[in-house]
Length: 206
Image (cartoon, rainbow, N blue to C red):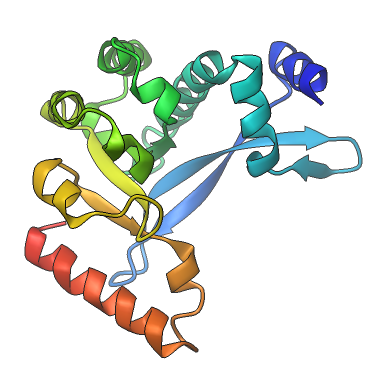
């Protein structure tokens, strides 16, 4: 599948799907998260958890990540006049991308070239990023937020969860991992965890 993935990327057969983010208080769609998909014959898709490791193995993550950001920003630009000005496009960024020394400069250059405003962009990072050198992570997050870009911690509650990261790193949003939200209506433990995260987030202004 490695060669197939290289071919799919070079032939631009990968695509982005956009999942709406709904404000449960108003029912309005306030953002959309872009999701990378690899379509194959028969109307099926190879799941990201299968092809992302292949991309890492093939050394494609940086090029793929650059393409995802540029494509998502063009899509957001195409919505001008069709959605609220504050509507955001949320873009997942891998640890490989984020740890590049010029990551922030690359993102800001792509945003500027697209004509999209910083406040119309959201960058999503997994908790694995937080285990990198904290000072470097802090500097990059602050630089992004200084341009109006919102930063979310994805899959919160799993992996390298640590409350110290929330204290030291300037995130705007927490995305509670679906392993908790999926079962929260039928599982008291999951419900309690979700409620606790909501209370904590509210107290922290997240």
